[in-house]
Length: 403
Ligand SMILES: O=C(O)C(=O)C[C@H](O)[C@H](O)CO
Ligand SMILES: [Mg+2]
Image (cartoon, rainbow, N blue to C red; front, side, top):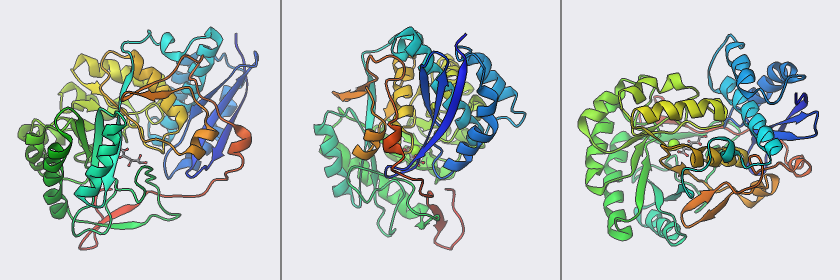
């Protein structure tokens, strides 16, 4: 038995907030897990400190599945982003421990590698089409095989997903939610010219992606998907809010543009109908927000039965611990699609030293035992928590719009 002797939550803010769980065992081996939920970080820290850690002490760290079931079924109040991020952090840490004890990189415990590397996509953005495509050209020169394009919208002051910084993008932008103005009509007019110009400039050998950030109704999403078909996007992401999974039937009726959704999902139940009815082509649920490696493998297996591939979220608000775990997962599953890769800053990378590396448009988790990532607690302590929120969107008449 490998007894869990201690566990603690480390909150740090090297430019943005991260929450990390560290579990220690009787053999001195420890594991870490990402528990970061952007804009609600302290809720997960409390869920872990006040409701999970007391139940972990004394348990056998090798019993990953039993502990997962205990934390999921035993919670009574099942699911939700806070609960499932807390469970995810425990799950990642326990897989880290098990792989360290086995002296193997985690992907070897998940069935070994199904591929030589993990194809990633970078984030090109800019205030104008020209600026966005100049940014995209840099990613193409760096060897990226896939690039997401997000451009400013003429007539709108700011657009979510368009960073003030050329290469680093931090979604949480203020200590209280900033408010941005939204116009669907202006947005819908702006995207097709962006993709037409992108194919002109970048050619057809690079995958081009776009994120709608839940802003359209199903029929508007169908219209945008149809408008983009001539430019063959790799996917149109978060086209419409997905609480009503049946909404995607309407989009599917109008366009063959591939659909991706799921970065806000926290369990298989959020995507069961979407997958079963093949209403999407890529499921974006992540290790940190969907219950960890144990649950995400179930989602991937279910998706594989229905011809759906993975496309895990990988923004900067998912820590390098989650990125490392995602890469082991991505390497080991048969229906991997693509992995989002928003590079972290040097400050963040210093707090989370890691073995994963980028080469020729792909990331690889490396061969270090476990997840291959650590947290420098002394350095982490130098960056105290600093409240930050994601912005909200209001329409031109002042009414609230879908996130
Ligand atoms: O990376 C993406 O696809 C995003 O949509 C960014 C998210 O809005 C961000 O990670 C939310 O915290
Ligand atoms: Mg997104």
